[in-house]
Image (cartoon, rainbow, N blue to C red):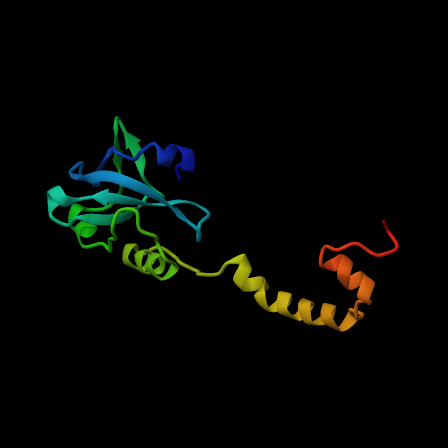
Length: 148
């Protein structure tokens, strides 16, 4: 897996399929939140008739001035795509994982901790004492009358 700073420099370069055939020009690199690394290259594949397609960069390698991926041209042509400058939503990323046969757990730390955080908040509310009028003024950014 290329580091994000390396993959970012691939913008504008040609991507090749496993046989060395041109797939298109890399328009952008998208971060993969699932894997916490660069995940997808958005290709302008207009010269092969498909327009914009997303290709995983996990197994991409530099081949001279070009980038090679282990997928066949026809497979990439049929892949899900999106417009340049668009946002890659989680449900779209999940569809890409499925299309390319990659494992997708869709679990994140936020999802796993969400229930625990709600329980903690409820417990904290039970322990709080009501604020005195002077303390409430301080909490709102005011000054206590006795501290001039």
